[in-house]
Image (cartoon, rainbow, N blue to C red; front, top):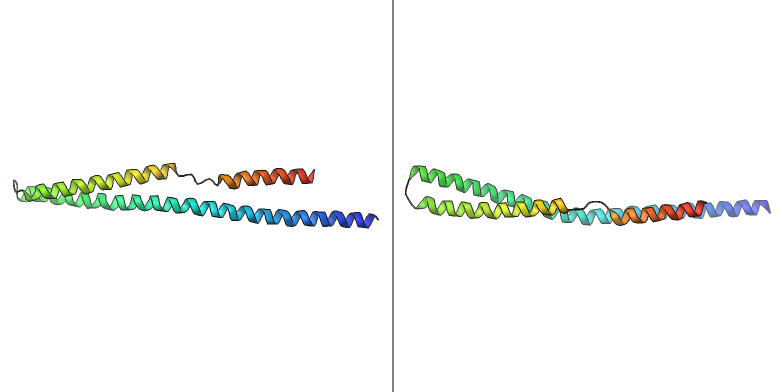
Length: 130
């Protein structure tokens, strides 16, 4: 009779081990899914910062061209048009960079759901081993 109880206890521990293994795998899958979702959002925000930076660079080139035109043809209206275009492009790029930067600052990469479920799982396992 003692052997049956030991075997039953062994089977219970085997079941518990399999359950914990399955649980850990599921937690890893949840963490991976959560991180992938957040990383996708952050990559879009980073792309916005990149596009904004490119527009700022184009604005700088336009401003430099305007300065060159001003120096070469002082008083000719061609530089005015170049300056207006450069300012508009620079402002648009600055707005995109500021927006993307703010969104990146607000990004939360902590897998909160996973942390909660791991905590719950630890409590469950602690109850089972007591």
